[in-house]
Length: 540
Ligand code: CFM
Ligand code: HCA
Image 1 (cartoon, helix red, strand yellow):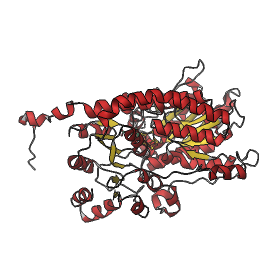
Image 2 (image 1 turned 60 degrees about the vertical axis):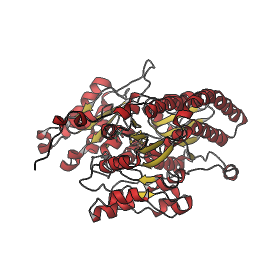
Image 3 (image 1 turned 120 degrees about the horizontal axis):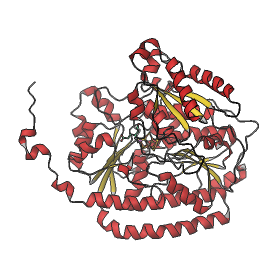
Image 4 (image 1 turned 90 degrees about the vertical axis):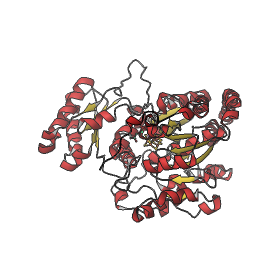
């Protein structure tokens, strides 16, 4: 692996190589890695074909995308709205008779040259009015794209003004309207967009309703986005255990769920990257403790359920969780008995987002496969090295650009869920609150950990290391498959899934078996190998 790194870096100009060197680690074993840090959450080098997306994508697509009853208006040229329309394959259950579902629509102000020159605020007012007239929604959200920031349209002023105007029309219908300054260029990646989205939802929605719904064990799931129906499988399992999902950020979610998030007994964080600060804010404001969970992988699912049960400490729940695990593991074990002999020893690489490149390694482990290279597109150092490094993370101008909310205890509703004594007891029994150790400790010696990998490095890695499967997204898919290596999209599951929970694990085992054991990849020949007339020669 050290030679692979050298081979790749030596092709770069010195300045680029020096920078990539800090973002490209060879795993030297657990002890040595304790002192190594990775550079992350910094700007991509201009000219390099990154996997990353923009701040608007992180805000509008990722965080608010899976919520069904907020009308999400993109203020910008039509491409931004169109491209972020249902491309992530997050699903929602709108089967209740009165359930509103706007996810199938694409709302945009369709800014054109005229609006860029003379300002787009009037058009935005009209769009909000039109959305209100057509749907009478519970909430309308406005998302800024790059040109909005450049010309200075005040989206927040329009939101305030329209909220006041529309709430005066019909006193029986309350509509909440808020906006996001999530211009695409605002941060170095989608990650900034998560933060902007979460801050505004926290400011404008969370805490609006403080009445506790029914349910003895009330949890919020933070950072689960219902890709391919994952949330449905997680909800099925929680239901079976008797655990009530109070609020989901934001897979299969509704406005009301966000509004009542403050009453839960426990916050469970799936994707640490996109939302860990929300868990902290809810702890400060209302005293809700948080734990890291992972429902990707059958063993991880079982572990997460046990952790939740241990937190509540109720014998009845602990026993029920064990019953559910035993019952669900039958099918998991039977599938593995069939599949594992064929997948054992195969190798995988995962370069995805800010949490899946870690979580999906658990599924590969269950299949007896080795993850020989992994990295995130836009995660921060804590997602690689663990939360212990948070105090040492350098705050640069780009991160300072993203607002940190200052949260205080809510005097009326603050209520620590556990006494100090109970917390101490749990901790003494090995229970960890607010803890995430990151991806590096779970990887083996001699693997590669690469932040913000680019298309050239991807092709080079595959050429040298020849993994049996590569996990990434749509931009990488066909380039990688043309090299004769199957690519599994972990963003939209290639229309498959769910892959979370127990049933999801079974789906994943079967899918990976099909991919890594199919003969088709070895027959693959690029078109120009067969028909040389298709190959072009560059005559510069
Ligand atoms: Fe979290 Fe996500 Fe991800 Fe993410 Fe994403 Fe996503 Fe992803 Mo695509 S919030 S970091 S910004 S788990 S959209 S649902 S699949 S890159 S690994
Ligand atoms: C985003 C969304 C994305 C893109 C996926 C991909 C997703 O980052 O804006 O590149 O295939 O999950 O849909 O991450």
